[in-house]
Amino acid sequence: MRRVYCKYLYTLDGQKPAPGFVEFGPDGTIYQVGFVPIEEASQADGYLDGAIVPGFVNAHCHLELSYMKGLFRRGTGMAGFIDQINALRDTAPLQERLYDIKFWMEKMWQSGVSAMADISNGEDSFAIKAASPMYIRTFLEVFGTEPKDCDAVMEGVRKLQEKALGCGLDAAPTPHACYTMSPQLLSAVSALGLESGYLSFHSEETPQEEEMIASGSGPMWENRKAAGMSTPPVTGGTSLEYFVERLSAVRQLPIREHVLLVHEVCMDRGGAELIKKTLPAAYVALCPRSNIYIHNALPPVMMMREEGLKLTVGTDSLSSNDSLDMVSELLCLQENFPEVPTEELFTWACRNGAEFLGRGELGTIAPGKKPGLVMISHLTGEGRLTTSSESYRIV
Image (cartoon, rainbow, N blue to C red; front, side, top):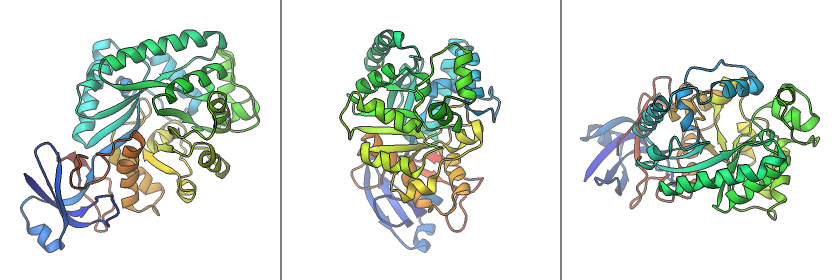
């Protein structure tokens, strides 16, 4: 049995953060939680001058792209980013890719990530993820702009799912985005993915995406045409509306499975209302540093809060980020949306992510649970994050 004290204990179960302690066993099971005066906490053995929070949940990551760190130019917009992905994907030897996957997997675990929603386009990461103590739901992401290829793509992702399940992973197919899939494939893979109870979708990430769906113009539209690819239908509306329409082709609305809408940089209030009406169990994954890296924009976080949407936090990949560090994502959100309380930021990064994944043992600190415990250092006197703040796993 071990007991640690801290200046700010965030249980995230309705109790306000305050000085306190957590008592836990060797396997991480929480036995006791208590709040005490700061004078008592700071003089106790095992005192940590910072915050203790539950293990983080990285709600959106592309772990298999870790070998791409530092290779991409910033600020190219989505069309330029896609060109770089196409040019650089799978250019590193397999052993180098596996080394980077393992390195960043272990780094995330040591920094306090207890669970992750990870995107896979192939099997490179399967064995490494299966060997990790972290809980991981793997979304097997597919692409295919040509309607004639739909059946072949579906057959391929089913085979990939068999490999993932054979490694002991929770894994199911998921669509990538409206602009990389034919309407037929978008509906077919969504229907198959929803059978698992979960779906992940890159949604309204960039104005270029919205431009191609709304009016059939812009850099991404020209990019697709120049490559000889079929383009998505021009609807005059948003890509989110188009996604919901494709879901309705295979499932009756509202859809009550857990749907993760990744990025949502271009969401407006109409989009928020559409989500609440048609996808009542939807969550939004905020990846702010990736959004800034690619096109120097951020989601309308304050509007999302006002509309009552469930927010989570992810790192995206090292093709569009400098690290897979959750504290850095939270600091970015704090700096750009200072009205958001620290406790709410931690709720997004811990409890909401656990809820999306359906992992009741994670996300909050309470007796009987095993969420993992994370120490966050170098806070301000008011308990806010700083550029020096770091996280590390206690258990």
